[in-house]
Length: 151
View 1: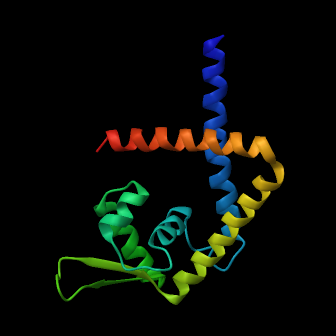
View 2: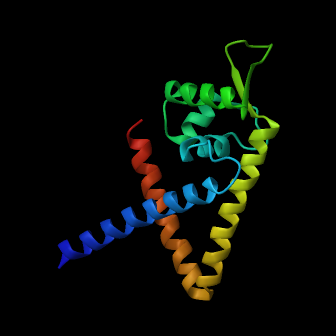
């Protein structure tokens, strides 16, 4: 019986992960930003509107290496969504910001997330919402610890 539970849980987690990514991707493909991959959109999201984030901070949030991020940032610079600058006090520090075009992507992507959360809030009420939030929090902390253990 335990094996069946593991199979069901695995299937649910994989399906949920894939469904969210596919829906997110299709949602963004119906905008003027169809030239961006979902990975590039998530990079823009990690930079955020406030910007002035270091490459290390962004890479940590995305769970990728700075080298991998550098490649992604170079593509986003060429596409006009991101700009990079060094600070005068320490030229080794590279800060990344969104351009106006990048902020537009950030805003459109934020709408997708708001609509997703609104739908969940509509579907889950009261105690069900509390239980869902608690369970997702536990799952998130588990995966965060798992990620940190690979550092």
